Image: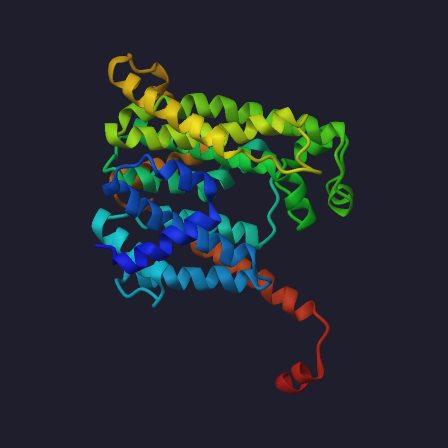
Length: 348
């Protein structure tokens, strides 16, 4: 059980770090809201630990140690870690799921770029779908079809985030648009990063990415009726709020380089109301056949890990290879830095 004082800390972390999820969480039943906020707080703080620090490789390796301690039942003495450990124990959380998130953060720390839409989906599966599947575990949902649709929603939300943050990411030296798309548009990645400006080519790619997200919102929405009734309003709300961000990007002419799309409080209230109505309607309306669509190839490993309540057989090797690669790159980066007098004396 989560300590109430740790829970207060998690609520504050989400209130300031993820307004969209905080709004959607208001519609979750209390039995789910607290563990969901604890889960999101740990994931949010993990993301910030990598995103907001220069020593990104060290941050990822430190997160791996924190995960080890949490699964050993001896969390680091911090509210988010203690709360997440309680979630692991209370819900039998498969370790493959937070490890998938960790690998996605390692890809970020290594500055990985994605050549194709499939590679971008693989990244989105790790940093977003893994969280969606963990939410299903909190709801005691292990059905493969429902898990696959949760993965669809996760990928859709992450693609929306990427479409919204093109300029913000570029100014931080990050690029998520598929490089194959950029080549097709005649836009050089390095030139764009050096001087990120709105252009028809990037607007075209943003439009294309949002179309992909829209298709996945439809597929993902078909799975919400498979969730416990009390949980459906909150998940419908998350779906509408994130899709609404995409709508704001469209309203800005697909320019997410010079501006960042935002949704207002009244819009969120409207989507919350709509979500309550949809949840009620899902009781009497026939289910969508899209619930049975095959999972995206890039998310199958998450579905299997959650459905079987155990990690994929080769997952730990995959993760450790990623961490070893990140550590090696970080060592090469450090060796390439100008050596100070202190460093020379230290290695002499």
